[in-house]
Length: 351
Length: 185
Ligand SMILES: Nc1nc2c(ncn2[C@@H]2O[C@H](COP(=O)(O)OP(=O)(O)O)[C@@H](O)[C@H]2O)c(=O)[nH]1
Ligand SMILES: [Mg+2]
Image (cartoon, rainbow over all chains, first blue to last red; front, side, top):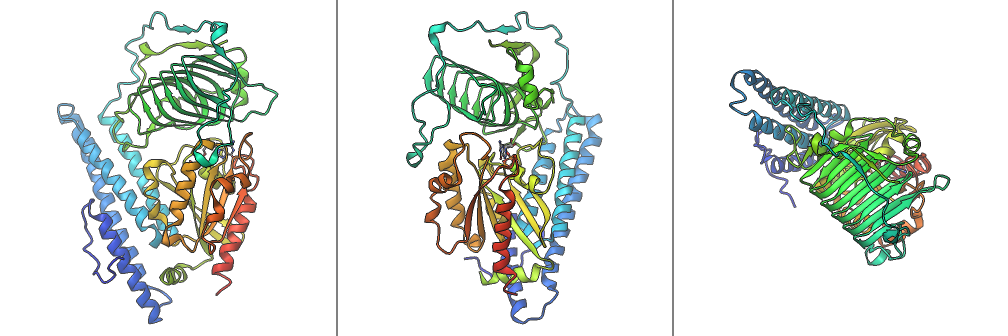
């Protein structure tokens, strides 16, 4: 148990020490509150007000320091950069902001909701200024169009697969759901190697979720709309999917190409994959590296209508707004990149 | 535990309830909160960190904490436990593969001393998706019957997409919390 007799620590702990400090503060606060109650002094608990005050002081102090760091970075940029890269400093700021965010989370139980909201707003403003400063001092290269000429054979038209290889049926095998869950099977393709897997979802039929799991060297073509799409353990596969009117969850994939349109996309544990996406919200990656992103490029008869039905006919540009949940936001994550135009496939026709 | 209720009484000026939304990522937590609050749910980005919403519900102010569910930050959940009156555990009923993960995280969470007094609402979400498990099936898979007998809990099927079931769930949760906290005053 925590030692509740510790005196409150001094008010300027290092970032690394703030956890322990907060715990001690918390213990101290609990004790103060209980004393308060026992003596029945309080309708208006002063000590609670005190700790709120000291939190707010710390918060403000840290906020000011972040702001002045940011303005210093943006001022020195013109003169001394790029000979002197601002990246490390920006990363420091990013760390300070996330430390501050954590502080708010940890202290939130003692803060009135108004203060919590204000602090959260401040943090999101700080992140925004950080992004602004970053894009000013580190010019983005990724959208320059220096290399206008297109790759010669950009049209990537896939011939219909030889009839014999086509697997049109879903796998009979039970998915491994963990010992107790066996019996519940979701539709999908599972445990295949070097096959072409094709499925067309009937428009008049209520469509649900679909799963791809344990595939190696396969090509998957799914036409029509889906509600939810799960992908798990794929290696060296090509996956072409019509609009998903909902979310896509991708885990443990390597060396694959995905062409997907959906409302949300979450990518976990992906290595060396290319994603051609259309998404209504920002795609996220977590524990991934070597992943590249380009715009959706799928064609089949009737896809326009399907996209419209799924509310995905508009290109949002979000395919390039990837958030790496493992990376502090200031500087471009090293784990993903925009596919260079010359390396992109232009259109994928499945028929 | 005694201490907690003391803090609760001191802090509460209005009839406020603090509710924590948890569950694996992609289960629909953010969508549920926005839907309950009558907000647009057409574009939702995955939650990094957490969102807080104060919603007037019946005669209470619900302070709802919507915490990101991705693996990276599950270990931070404990930062939000203090003073939680109600827990909403959201399950994606169509994500059969991760049900084991879901079960593990739920039972892990319930071990938390600081949450021992909190009412637990389990939303078996995404019932609109064909092939989703029913609330009964979810209850079986998650082994809810094995929970501590003192826990107030209930499972409700819902769809954040259509809104079905959401009010039923929140009505139960708010009533249950109210009967524990406010009726006693
Ligand atoms: N079909 C369907 N999709 C849902 C439902 N609830 C949420 N979703 C979708 O599931 C995805 C994840 O939702 P989100 O609220 O971000 O999940 P969170 O990570 O738990 O906050 C989004 O694409 C939502 O549109 C539901 O009841 N039915
Ligand atoms: Mg969320």
